[in-house]
Image (cartoon, rainbow, N blue to C red; front, side):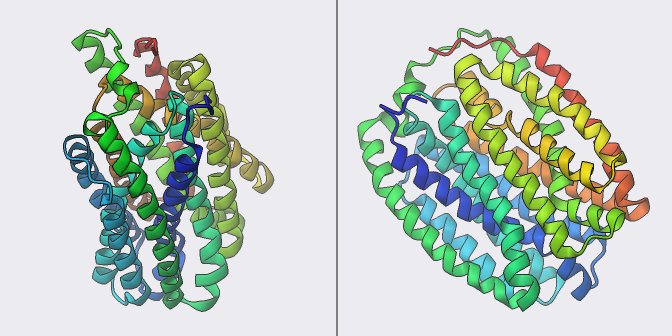
Length: 392
């Protein structure tokens, strides 16, 4: 990464804000075993909770991204975190299925604001190393999602649902961090036209309209593969470990933690390799490299299941920043909209996948679901149709 020109402190603050936001998001699936029992929910209702949370994010993120490109506002991030704060307080007292849905919808709205806005801030602070900057931003989210299950295991499981209110204190910390970013962002808006970085204004891919359309379709297929597969792991790995190996809720949360930490490592490696050797190369290795591990995972013993979960998370996650940066390079000058659309689509696909896999688990078994989803990474073969982009 070109550290001489990058605003490292801003990238770290953006990553911290992403960490806190996604840790709050991770609280939701982490309490599924608890609320499934206390509220008597089915797997289908569990999937509906995820769908509600992620659809509120996915539908609003492209809109927020478009507004960010056209009408940048430095303190929009703070407003979004206030929605998340409200959702957490509601979730701590939710005693019915509808109230849980309302709570997670508020949290989803907060997330819909953070991702496109923060992604744009990361681009502005990248110093030209766009892949690494995006990875640093996304690592915060992955670490936050990894800490969520552990925090639930240490705080919520022993002390009950009401203890979720303690996460609201951290939401206030997030408001403070995002306010500091807002002050820096305000100066960038004044310096650059509409808050667009010089890396957007200088970028020219020289691709035809047809090549851009084909590339976007390929990226959609890749996101479908990645997001459906990871939605199954993130939302149902704990149930899988409990059902197949008889682990406790706490032990299964630690396995999920290992998976999420491995995705953070993969993100960092993928960002650096993408900046050096190209995004397409990273995408190839990520999808086809993770396929053998995914196919073997449903048929292994406990030890090898944990090992393969870690390997799949590490290899597949390396494509996350590469896909997003590739998308923003296809349509330079629209970082907010593209980031919002991609993050929103990712959440939406994850929500649909979660609901679908919950329904399949109800009519068959959670182990059968893991066997079916193991084939999804093979869709990475469509990477062949991505045009090579020379980054100026």
